[in-house]
Each structure stands twice: as C-alpha cells, then as structure tokens.
Length: 445
Image (tube, rainbow, N blue to C red; front, side, top):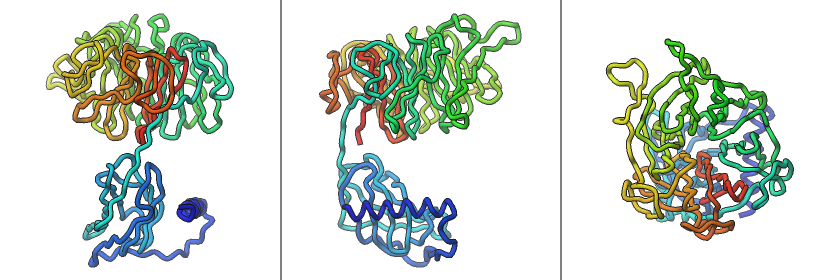
C-alpha cells in the first residue's frame, strides 16, 4: 500500500510540473487503437473507500485522460493519469459494496468498453460525526483556533468543495469564516443586522448571505466573491416595480439559494418569491402568496435543476422548477400548481419511509449533494434527514427526540436543534448545531 501511495504522490507531482511547464514536451503520446478491444486485467488494491488510489492494469488505454472513463458500477472515478497498459485513478464515493470495474472510451471514432472479469472492488463505508469548530454550550464571539473559537448562535452555513466555510452567526450580526486547512475561525464581517441563510453559486465563484429582517430593507443580501478572496462584501438592494413599489418591501426573508445566474429569495409566509440576477442585479417577482408555512428555506439541486423547499412548521419538503414560464407570461412564474409536495405528512415525531407517508418534525436548513440527494435539519427532533431522488427518507444522524451533544457514529450522535446544513458535491455534510453553539461535520464515505 505504501508503494501505491508513493506512486500517486509521484504522479501528482509530475502532473503539477507539467502544468507549470517544468516537464519537457517530448513525452510520447499513445492513441487508443479503435480497431482493438479495451482489455482490463487487474486492479490494485481490491478494496478501499472514498479517495483510495487505485491502479488498473490492462491494454489499449492510450495516454489521453480525455478519451477514457473508469466506472465503479455507475459511479465515475477521478482519473489521475493514463498509460497504454495502466490507469491511475481514485475511488468515487459509495459506488456500492461490490463494484464492477469498467473502462470506457469516449471522443473516439469507435467507442468501446472493457470490463474487469472475475474481480469486484470491495468498498468500505466509514461514517462519523465530528465537531470542527466552537466550544460546546458557550455563546460568545471569539476568533482563534477552531475548537477554541466561539459562536453566539450559529444559524446557517455554506461550504464549497474546496472547504471555504462561511457561518452566519445571526444573534451576533456576524459572518465568520472557518478554515479547516489553518484550523482557525475568523470574522469576515460584523456589518450585518441578522445574517441568515446563505448559498454558493453553483459554479462556486460567489457566496450570497441574506439579511433576514425587514428593518434592513432595501438591502436584500450581500455577496462575497472568490476573485476578491472572499473580501469586500457587495450589497444587493431591492428595486421598485413599474408602479413605484419595492418588489420585496417590508418583508422578512427566510430562505435563499442560488444557481449560476440568479439568487432566489422567499419571504415570510411565502408572500413573495423573487429572483435577482447575479450580474445585472435586476430584481423580479416570480411568485406570491404561495400555500406554504410561515418559514421556508431553499436549496438549488444542481442534479435536476429544481429548487427544494423545507417548510418549517409543516415538516414537509416541496420543489419547483424555477424556469417554469406559463403560456401567458414571458418570464418564469411559480403558482401553487407548480409546487410539488414530495415528502412529509405534517410535523410530529420521526417516522421514516417514502414520500408523503414520512413524518418529520420542524425543518430548517436544506441542501443537496452532487447525486441529487436532499438533506434537511429537523430541529424539533434534533436529527438530520436524508431524502433520496426516489423520495426515500431516513434519519442519518442524531437520535430522534433526544437533544444533547455527542460525536462518533451517526446513529449514536446527538444534536441540539440544528438549523443550518450544507453539502459538498461529494456528500460531506457540515451542520450548524445551533444550540450547542458548534459546527459539526457528518462524513459517510
């Protein structure tokens, strides 16, 4: 195993040197012979988990990573390097207990594939809940080492795939950053009245953080940008419509999410559903007086392009297509007819299952991973739910109706009214465990 690790370090350094121009350009290329089969003969190691480095032996792989794909069942692996007789790759997340290994060609005149016969890769799942920032039950404002820092009331959180973590510390009027690499919490801004739900754009070039309270209007939210090192927050303001009234006006904002083009906002009691163009900053009303609970939270699902709603007091999950444009309109408009009730029968004790037979408690933060799974915080029952694309809903962390604080196995862990949750693309979850005053990580890999 140490030899494989050393080999992967060497490959990574070689690729890096080549990108920086340190490697000579005389390296020989080997095209795939489209008239010959793709042969897959072995894989080493034959077991592991997410991110395990693997070597696939065979023949006729070529040397161009853009023309080869490797699958563990239906999950695509990350390719590091390809040579005619060997592929260096990394195991994807949760492909199944036993995986068939398949190598597929693409961007060639005669696509082909090869399957590893007689051998299946065994995937090991490791699951844990860990505390990554904050001090248990200490409500204060303090920067510093992550596990010595304090949050007054961490409500919502947003996390990029490269672990840029931003926390809305709402009662403190503060937005904080958590650097896992440096193991530190530091304040980004105290120029907020009541920072609430936040979201990265789907290309992760920007993060948007809403101001919840109506007293901050016409300010709607602020944006931080990657190309400005997440500094210099830019304000986005409400705008007047053609009869001179503000689009959102004197409304609290309860939910925010974003795709690559728009930021979406929903106000208290779902009175207004609004989109704001990220470049032009144009504010448009796209729905009003929707039949939802008083407090609702939003998440954009990159997998299917829908926006999902966690309806707090009703304990239900809905979704809508933000592009839906009726025949009598030129721009999107969402009415009650477009709201799809997916999961939850009404707030109560935990009852797992599928679809509207499920019973959740009171819901808060909602998020989606790269596979289209939806996760939400049930702060009444102190648990975290997972809803699969086929609407099967199960508790994945916490013990129903038991509040407390405990790390470890997800089924044995304890939370205290968690509000905010955010998923990286590969399904690593970060939770604002609000009344424990902590940031927790749920890794099921």
